[in-house]
Image 1 (cartoon, rainbow, N blue to C red):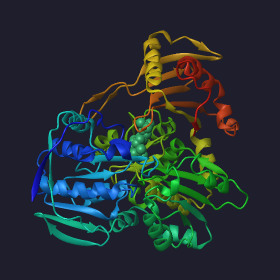
Image 2 (image 1 turned 60 degrees about the vertical axis):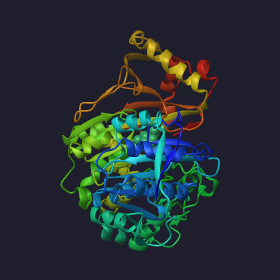
Image 3 (image 1 turned 120 degrees about the horizontal axis):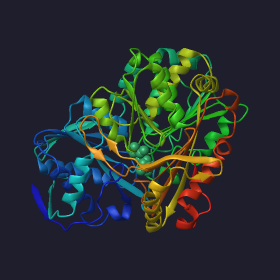
Image 4 (image 1 turned 120 degrees about the vertical axis):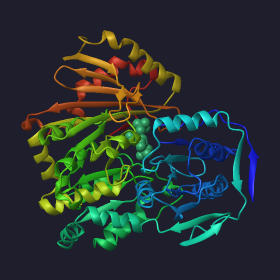
Amino acid sequence: MIKTVSTTPYADQKPGTSGLRKKVPEFQQPNYAENFIQSIFDSLEGYQGKTLVIGGDGRYYNREVIQKAIKMAAANGFGKVMVGKGGILSTPAASNIIRKYKAFGGIILSASHNPGGPTEDFGIKYNIGNGGPAPEKITDAIYERSKVIDSYKISDFPDINLDRIAREDVGGMIVSVIDPVEDYAALMEELFDFGAIRNLISLGFRLNFDAMSAVTGPYAKEIFEIRLGAPDGSVRNFLPLPDFGGHHPDPNLVHCKELYDEMMSDDAPDFGAASDGDGDRNLIIGKGIYVTPSDSLAILAANANLAPGYSHGIAGIARSMPTSGAADRVAEKRGVGIYETPTGWKFFGNLLDAGMATICGEESSGTGSNHVREKDGLWAVLLWLNILAVRGESVIDIVTQHWATYGRNYYSRHDYEGVDTNAANGLITALREKLPTLPGTKYGDLTVAAADDFAYHDPVDKSVSQHQGIRIMFEGGSRVVFRLSGTGTTGATLRVYIERYEPDSTRHNIETQEALADLIAAAQAVADIKGHTGRDAPTVIT
Ligand code: G16
């Protein structure tokens, strides 16, 4: 039976960089999740009788919201729901399922790299039929709807058993509980030379993958240990846990410190990697070298033709604005397009759909290609392994040769987390106001060449996205960028991105923070970070 339940709106359901993210207790308020899900459905047209994909990263509250979403999909007239066994679907796997089975769209339950548990983070995001995150015109419509919603529809059939693969007809809708790994692993086998990687591993190449007790565990076990023959134990923390074992499932140098230390030790394995809560981010560390996401994007793009799925070359590269310009140099040399978008994977969708870009990446540990419409952590790891297998060189050799060929973009991001929201907004406003006066200003030996507030003009649908980050460019090509994170749930996070290009290969071995020291000081001065936030230093440096 279908029930129509009256509800009252919540004022705070504005999707951020990647869907709605809040603390679990906020999602547990009466009708909170239901309001948002109904607002999604109310913002869509033409889904009657069509398929909806549902899955999540296994975090606390995942199963409860999945049951609600299935019952609401039935009540709203979807014809079929495909849901991952155990409620599990990594974000890239969900994107693949939407595309492969031509679903109308999908609901992904995740707060990505944010911690999980009864008092930690949860999230809901809607992906469209191309498998990618809903564009701004849909997320804006969802928000508008959420502000006035007065009822939602839900069927009252019993909970679906999510723990066995089955197909049943409930409330006039088919619910198919599917293997979350199979289709994804098959796609990876199509794109990469598994034979060459298996051979590399059989010759003693050692890899160490940290699934961070999050969603990639089952995928990594199947792909690295079973299909590629890596010894048992190569994948650690492979069981997805609702609280990620109490850890922060963010694959950066702070939260993967143990892996980093191991990779820097004398008997380090050849290759270390990790992924985040929902499997779309990646961390790449070679023996003795951490590869920044911006460098990784450039190196993957430069070598992608070594993998079967990209053997015909790439059409173009897209990167988010704060990501370093390393990829631009590859695009220039190869004569392929380069696109600079705002932060947020949703901005790559049009470029990928139009065939303008093949490989995309962001400084925030995301890389991916046109195989799905999300960034994809395991894809990046497998492309690295494919390149290593074909080139027969170490990670450090590949990276240093890349710098020698293209120059090195020294790069770092400084995050000031948990800053008072008004203070953070005040800092950005003050910076924006002083933009016209900045050109010509000196900070130590640095002179500001140009400064602006980045706006993106989508070349495909011609939409314009304003206020996507403050850029300060210095003479000589260095720059600092300021923006506020759109994914945090506590106060505001100020992100400061710092970059310097160094063409001279005799100067490629300087410690990163040292190489950027004058720019870091300039960034602190130009934005008066201490004055606005009271902070002397960032909380996270990556
Ligand atoms: C999300 C988006 C990414 C974005 C990242 C950081 O990643 O999908 O495109 O780069 O957030 O955004 P912000 O700087 O606004 O926090 P994820 O992995 O959290 O879905």
